Image 1 (cartoon, rainbow, N blue to C red):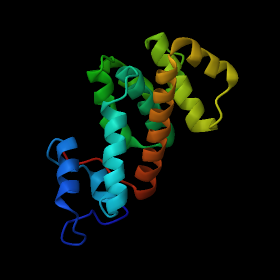
Image 2 (spheres, rainbow, N blue to C red; image 1 turned 45 degrees about the horizontal axis):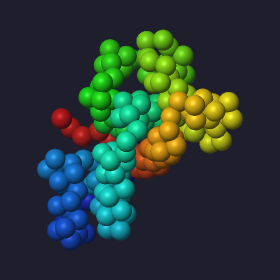
Image 3 (cartoon, rainbow, N blue to C red; image 1 turned 90 degrees about the horizontal axis):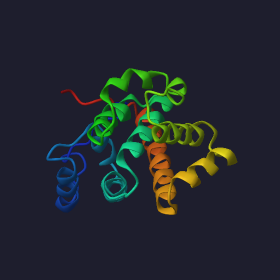
Length: 177
């Protein structure tokens, strides 16, 4: 990491904040937390917002996670991919397809992925690379998803573009297992 990992001696944080983060993380900080905790307001807002995006959205988690994985691959945020591929698999995705995401542009057209997965991947790629989504692609999204699902999938992709930029800029590395 390009910065020193946060520690409570250098920058004490309120117990309610650190306990909330640890609860969401299953009792152990991840390296991203150890960067974000240098800013109390950022860590507090992040924990609430990202927690909602990760666990409260109604859009199909498999589609949300494959979209996040595409964002990770396109931005070079390997950390993000390592954390989200297992979530994709847990949500019903096919673990055998992992290597196909090494080239997300090809994966978006690969029939090994479902039609919905390919659509979510194309949407994530357009939002990540071009920012402006072509009308024909957005039309496909509108036909396939409810209004709420469109908003949630869009927000998840946008959120994880933000996450990727922090991870890459700060060179946050995967945790030692």
